[in-house]
Each structure stands twice: as C-alpha cells, then as structure tokens.
Length: 164
Image (cartoon, rainbow, N blue to C red; front, side, top):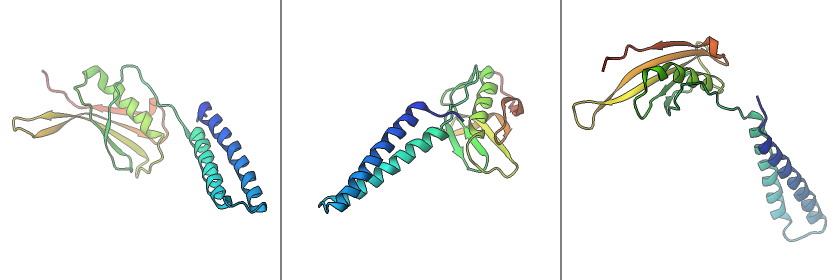
C-alpha cells in the first residue's frame, strides 16, 4: 500500500484549514456572532473533506501493468468473485493471457468476498450474428487467482479459438 503524496499533502492542508475554521467557530460562539451556526457547518464539512482525502491517499494502490496486456472494460461484477470483461475490439491471441493476468491482479486487491477464496476473471468477445441486432459472446479465456495473490498464483485457461 503506497501513500499518494499529492492527496496526502492536500488532506493535511485541508485539515489545517478545518482546525482554523473550528477555532473561528469557537470564537463565533463566544462572541455570539450571527453566523456562528453557519461556521459549524463549514468547519464540520471541511473536517470531513480532510478525512476523506487522507483516507483515500492511504488506501490508494496503483494498477498493475503487465507487458503485452490490453486495457479492457469490465462488463459484469457480481461482488462475490466473478468478473467478466469484454474488449470493444478483437484481441490478438498473444494478448489474451497477459490481459487475463493483468485483470486478475488488479481485481484481487479489491475488497470482495469470494465463496471459495478465488477471484475468477472471464474474458469474452461479443460477436455479431447473421441476425441484425443480435450478438453472442465468445469466451476467450478465464483466470483464477486467490484473494490478494501474486502473478505466479494465477491459473489461466484459454479457450480454443476458431481459425480465421
């Protein structure tokens, strides 16, 4: 877990502003200023904003990049360990395995519950059929990785691709 330095610094600066606003709010209550209740809202919102920036800075993780992999959008995630991705354009056969590995690594670090302790990532290509407006998914492969696992823990199964 790496700390994002820019967000951490912004969180600290916002926290300093929240402390100054809190001091101003206390002064407003002691001096019976007319805007003292507005200051309560402003200072509490600023404190929450500081906490959000700091927590995101601490929990931030860079995405894993594997050579030869293609970035593919996720189209389904049931939250219990099954994830489906579908590339918009056809993938070259040599990019299927690294893409599955990259997807599995990036998804295994997310907090989710998997019944068997494995993340299953499926890669599918959507192909048009002879009927207009109808398409069908063609499986390209599947990868499984234990929650929090490493690259060497991934098992990849590549579907038999038709020649052509």
